[in-house]
Length: 356
Image (cartoon, rainbow, N blue to C red; front, side, top):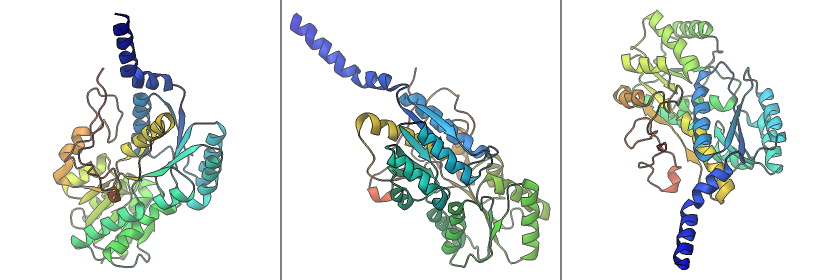
C-alpha cells in the first residue's frame, strides 16, 4: 500500500509539474514591448490585445511602451529606460536601424533577451544580437504586392507613405516598384498623417499625373483618406488600389470594389508569439530554429467572410469575447507563421484559448 501511495504521489507530481511551473512563473517574468507607433495609431490596439492575451495565457507580465508622437529618438530613450528597469526580455520594433540599433545592443549586452517584431529585417535582428525576428519583411511584402499588381495591369503608380520618418516602412514602396519592374523615382509620396492633408495630396498628385493607374497605401492612416479622395474625384473602382494592413474602412473598400486587396501582416501574431517564445525560452530553454514570418497574406473580397468572423478577437477590437481563439487552416487571414525555409507545414497551426 505504501508503494502504491508513493507511486500515485509521484505520478501526480509528474502530471501537475507543467501546471506548477506555469503558476510559479506567474509574476516572476516581466517583458516590455516597445513600439514606434504614436498614440494616435489605433492599428496598434491589436498589438496590445496580443500581448495581453499571451501574458494571461502563459502567466507573465507584459508592458506596452511607445513614443506618444512616434518620434524615433524618443523611442530610443524608451528602450534605454526599459532596459534599465531590468525586464527578463524586450520585444521591440526596429523602425530605424541607425537610431535604434545602439540601444538594442546595449540591452543585449546587459543580458536582456530581445526579439525584434513588426519592423526591421531578420538580418538586422541578427546584427543587433536579438534572438529572432517575428513579422513581415517589408521589402519582401512590397515586392509580392508589386508582382501581384503587375499581373493585374498596373504600369504606373503612386505609393502613399504616411510614415516617411521610418525608413523600413518605405521599403514597402521600393519592393512594390521592383515587383512592378519600374523605378521608384518620385512615386513615393510623403503624405504626413493628417487625413485632410493626405486626401488633398492624393487628389493633387492624380490630377497632375493622369497616367497613374495604380495606388499603394501603407496602412489605414493613408488608406482611409485615399478612399475619400477617390470617391471625391470619381476614380473609386476605376483605378487599381492595394493597401497594407486592414481596418474598417479598408474592409468596406475591399467589399465595394474600391480596393483590390489588403495585405494582412497579422499584427496579433506579431505580438502574441514573441511573448510565448520568450516565456518558453526563459522557462525551458527552447527556441524556434528560425525567424517567424507573419505575412504577407492578401485579403480580397472573396475572403472577407472569415476576416469579419474573427474581427474583435484577433484582428482588431478588444479580446474580450469568450470561446476559442483560433487561427484556422484555410482562413484568408492565416499566412505563413514559419519561415518558408524551415520546410515545415504550418497550415494546421492553431492557437486555442483554454476553456475555463
